[in-house]
Length: 62
Image (tube, rainbow, N blue to C red; front, side, top):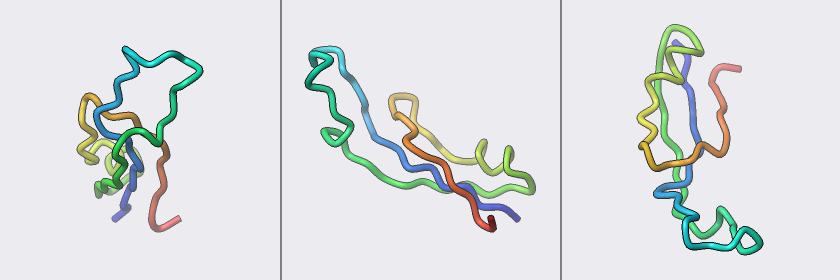
C-alpha cells in the first residue's frame, strides 16, 4: 500500500490581490493523505478541495 501526502493551501483566491503582493503564506495550509495500490491511486484518493492549491506531493514508502 502506498500513501500519498499533499501539502495544500486552502481557499486560494488572488482575485483582488495585485501580483506583486501575492504570497501563498496568506492562506491556511494543511496536509492531506490518500492510500492506494499505486502512486496514481494514492494521489487520486487525496481529497483535494476544488478551491485549494497543491503545493507539493510526497509518498511513503519512497
